[in-house]
Image (cartoon, rainbow, N blue to C red; front, top):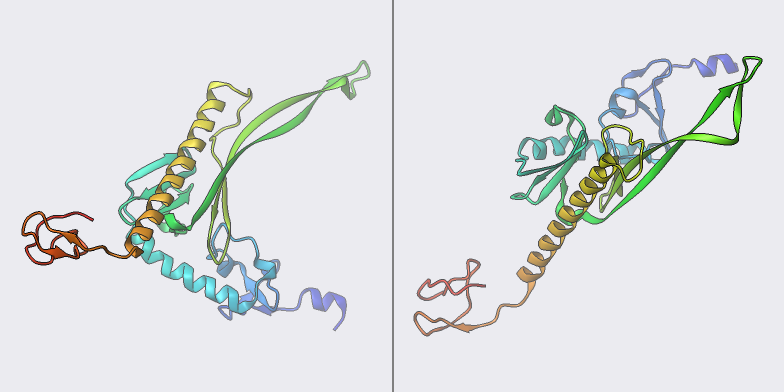
Length: 244
């Protein structure tokens, strides 16, 4: 088969078995992936070309199971603007999404305990401004002049088998002046999200550590018995509320 034939050789998706159309192939380390299957992967996943067919299958199984967690997600707090961080404080988990129909988008549901850190940064976009000379040609100013826009980005570092960070732009529209009202609001939102996730992560970890700590016998103030409080902090003999 010549080079032309190899370019247009039909391929099949190693996940669903379907035929891959022209320009529809997504290469894997040891196989091929159709664009329909690729759409089902996590939006935060970026290691597709270095992933094996088996690893992609595992992730798609996880993404399918994630639908049940999305269905049961109950938003208790909403942070951010167009890209939102939704918290389910009762279930101790969160999602990051820019979709208004986020349940249909199947966003990754992450546990608070999976957060390993949060970083924010300001990114500059510099666009050179030109002038028109006497001959009608565009030329640079001397020294060059630039139009500078600013964006505030937040990165949530997470412990996940499929990605290790979630990065998104906090501000909804471009910011033309640093330290403007819009800039300060974007920084405020970034700090609010970082502080919320960091605090919730620490609370979960403290609760886990407390649950693992060995129980200590105490004297019940109600019946005077030496008792090991149950999971609800009650005396095992009289049921009095001792606390944990």
